[in-house]
Structures are given as structure tokens and as C-alpha cells.
Image (cartoon, rainbow over all chains, first blue to last red; front, side, top):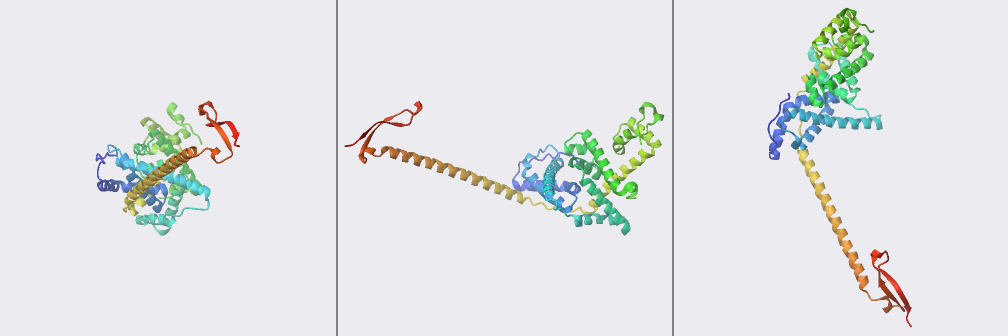
Length: 200
Length: 160
């Protein structure tokens, strides 16, 4: 994942666009996963990605071509997300009745679970568990949420997460530990000791 | 419940210490010595075993979220980069507009200033008051650096 692209960016705009698109296509799947798990909605994640691509292209000349393109664009995505998160937080404070809607899209995502061959009851239960899990992650402080999404949801190593988030591995460890404890606490409140058999 | 494992001497950890390390343990991020100590503790501690199973269950659930997403959404994201060039062009336009505005305003100020100066000069050149009034002033120029006005009346005489 972390490989430097040695191509320079001193090209005509059209060629730059082609080059940029090629780079983005190589990592868009991971970017989409990351965006979805951060925002919890398909629509929001697509908006987030669109804004990320625009901003990345706008500031393409600041990209250091000796370093990984994916890490660079991840950093942009995180910055865009943090800004949006702050705006939403303020908006929620000012307009508390304005709630986010994205349930239908989430349902669509969780429909993929049918492929695992579960019965309808089990499926409904699993969807509910995943929704509760998302709600728990959503309540985490932003920094913990970022680490949890990278390490636990997307299975990145501590080193990779540390490089992407630009913080020491020790910080990643402690944030992840605290995030897990908090999520566990929240799920325990809902499911109690059943937490052990939620998926089995 | 806090249990100190007495079986393992000074290296033994209590439940709180083990539970602090469990998160790292399930990620295999502990040192070999610590790993051994934790495993020895877990063998005899039901509470910590349960705690570890819960953490593993949550980790498994979190990974499932990603797998469900991967199955459903390998789709291509639309990339509308032309919006950037539009935005950049719009910014350029704003910049040009602002610069023109500043230039026009500066020219206006300079023009007005010159107009005002000319008006003042013209007023200075007009005939003395005494030619159309029945009195006369004697003026004396005063140096402004000295703190006075530009002109000062030194003598005032009424005409016959």
C-alpha cells in the first residue's frame, strides 16, 4: 500500500488529469471504505470523496512525488472529513432537530450479509447489531474513531495507521485501546453478556 | 474483581494490568515475556478470559462491517475534476475583478485629489476681496511649521 510514485507533476493540465485519475482509481476502493466507515452513509461518503478528489486535484502541485500518493490523499480526506465533522457538530448544536438520514443506504449495504446464507431472523438481528455498532463508533471522539476505523474495521497495521494519521504508534495503541473499551461498554449496555454470541 | 496471580511470582499481573494489555495482546503487539505472563494469567482467570472474548467478538464484528461493504460496493466513484478548473477560473475572475476595482478606486481618488488641488489653486488666484467688497485685508503668509494658519490678517481697513 505504501509505495512512492516517482512520476513528476510538471505536465499539461489534461495529462495531469489523466495521471491524477489513474492514481485515484488505484486507491479509490480503500478510500471509499474509509469514507463510508467514517461517515456511516453511502451518500455522505461519496460527497466526502468528491470533495477530497476536488481538493486533491486543486492542490496537486503540493504532492511530494517521492512519497506515497495514497497516504497523501488519505491525509486530504481526513482533513476534509474533520472540517465537515466540525461543521456538522456546530449544526447539530444550533439545529438539534435536524437529524441525519441515511438509513435506507445503510440497509442496502447490510443486504450484502444475505450472501452469508443466514435465515431472515438472524439477518435482522445482525443488521441491528451492525447499526448499534455504528452508533457506538459514531459516539467516539473523532481521534479514537479514526484509529478504530483504520485498525479494527479496515485491518490496517499500527504502523500503517500511524503513518496515515501522522502520530506515533504509542498514541495509536492507546487510542485504539480506549476506543475498544468504550465501544465494548456501549454494546454491553445494550446486549449485556450476549455480546459474546452476537455473531455466532 | 482484581486477582493477583501468586503462582507466577513478581512477574505476575493482576486483572487490571492484564485487561490494560488485552487490547495489545489480541493484536499480538505485546512483548514475548508479557505475552507469556498474560497467557498464564488467562489460564487461571475466568473474568479476564471473558473480557478477552468480548474484545475479540467486537473486533470480529468490526471486520464484518467492512466485509459487508466490500461485497456490496466495489463501484466507481464519479470524479468531476472539471469543477476544479471552473473553481480556479472563478477565483481568477474574482481576483481580476478585485484588482480592477482597486485600480479604479485608486484612480478616482487620485483624480479627485487633483481636482480639489486645482480648485484650491483657482481660489487662490481669484481677485482680492477688496475689489468687490467695501473693505480691505492685509494678509501675511505664515509658515505652517510655526504652528499658525496659512494666512493671517494683519490689517483690516474699511474703504471710503
